[in-house]
Image (cartoon, rainbow, N blue to C red; front, side, top):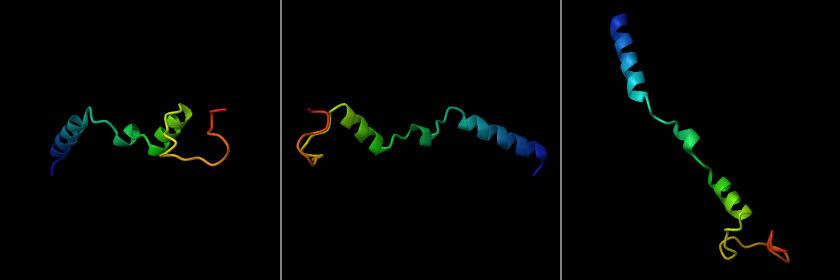
Length: 59
């Protein structure tokens, strides 16, 4: 394979990848979503039971 061919392949590869987002930077872990819902008071007591006298944030 000549150097010119390698250059053409490399340029095409980068051209094809242009605009492709990194899937790892788009991922939001489930624990983060759950914690945000907890802070905002969106979790159901039946789905996420608690221990103690009162629910957190409901005093």
